[in-house]
Length: 280
Image (cartoon, rainbow, N blue to C red; front, side, top):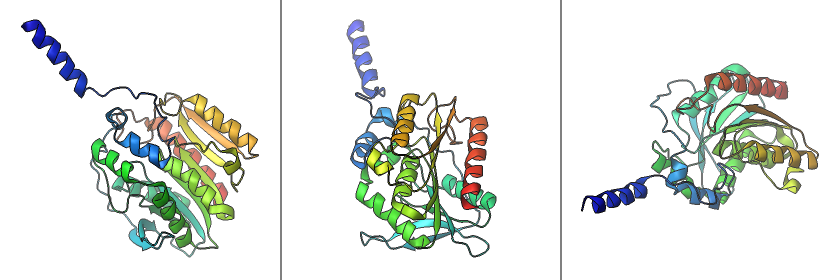
């Protein structure tokens, strides 16, 4: 009887233990449909530490703007102190446009000076505070809606705007996609451990070089994937600068248990120098 109870307990433990991803899809390297699949996977959810409680009380305002699909979108805007045609679009992690991202937007605003900073709300007002909530939100994010929000943000900046973008993980992927949508208005693109676009023909349409920040210990986007991105960018005739840190996926997120403050500081220094040069 004791043996049967022990065996039953083992099966119960296995049922509630996050399993490795079968045929794993690299983190943040998926289409909207694939992201929906990953969002429901407990093993994928366990790769993300829940954000630490944080309340943002700095400058900025919530704004709304039209999108091509007819549904208004919103974002968090920090205007330049003086009138400027320079814009930085900030793209959230899978949690949503939370106060951590608003603080990142303020940091860039303070350090860049005469640049308008707009953090786009890719989840239409919803924010996840647990892995399960974030997974559900990512499941509901369609490719069409994400693109509509990006186009709406670009349109809000205006046809004469000089636009750069930055994002982390889910947002790193979106930052590169945003640069493709910005066309000749694009002046810079920073992507933190986000999905590299693999289509060389699409990459050929980029009008800007890319700064890519990655971690050598990232199980989702390993160095081999980054090397392939470099190869594809070269094939497209585009320039990419890779900063590879001895760190894990999400190392720049302060709420990550494996947050690397030294790598984060250096990565930010590099991204800031890159963006200042692009906006000069």
